[in-house]
Image 1: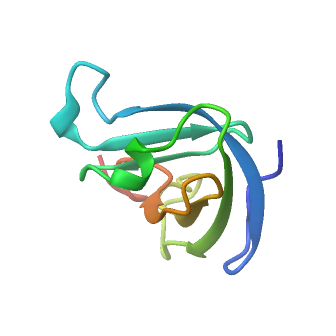
Image 2: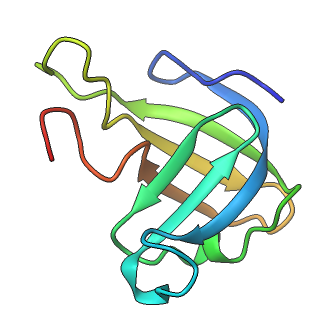
Length: 104
């Protein structure tokens, strides 16, 4: 559902397909990850309660809030999205990858 926002300030609706921890379900203190039906994911080295309270099927409003600059050709990682879970009312910000462009 929905497309991924591509311009800063652009928003869209999608649904949660998976919620977990950055390094797997058995490693809860490694940060948070959330995946959406539009193919986007958000990941953080920090545990984000808004992500952890989300459930599969929840509708989420995603907005692109920043795009990194001076990235190597073909490396589009590091876009930051704000998200609001429409069921819980909780909001958070996180990148679309564990590392920004040019990173590991």
